[in-house]
Structure formats: C-alpha cells, structure tokens
Length: 82
View 1 (cartoon, rainbow, N blue to C red):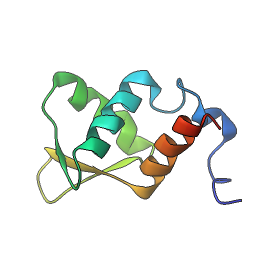
View 2: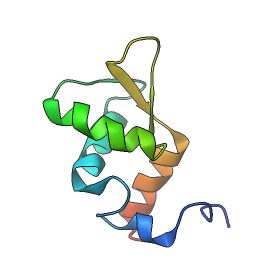
View 3: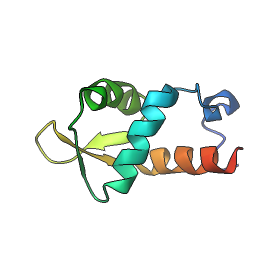
View 4: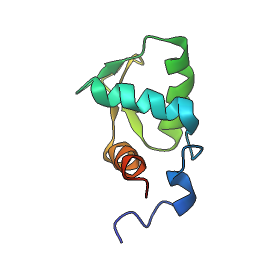
C-alpha cells in the first residue's frame, strides 16, 4: 500500500500538524511553487509541518516553503476523508 508508511491516525484533523497546520499547508498549496511566510501563525505552523515532512524550505532563506509530495498526499487524503 502506497500510504502505509504513515499511521492511519495521522489522517484525522488532529493528526501530526493539527488544524492550524492543515490551514497553513492549504495556504502553501495555494501559493504554487513557493509560499512566503507572512503571518505569525505561519512561523509557528512551519515547525510542525516540517517535522512531519509536509513542507520544505525553498532556497537558502527561511521565508519561503513548498509543499512536499508527502504533504500533498496528506491534504488529498484529508479531502477524501480516508
């Protein structure tokens, strides 16, 4: 199974990043190739999203992130309520 590496419990809204992290990841996805951290909440959410492997830094700076394949899969599975 392709998503077997992640536990089934992480697909809930309170999973590895919580609701604030999910909202952050949706903003990152909407940002396209790169999303610039703007809000204070972004700076807090990026810590948990990076720890889960859902976002990665873009370039040398610490202001731009992109959604990883794992992060996109996480959002897709949440949308399908799996």
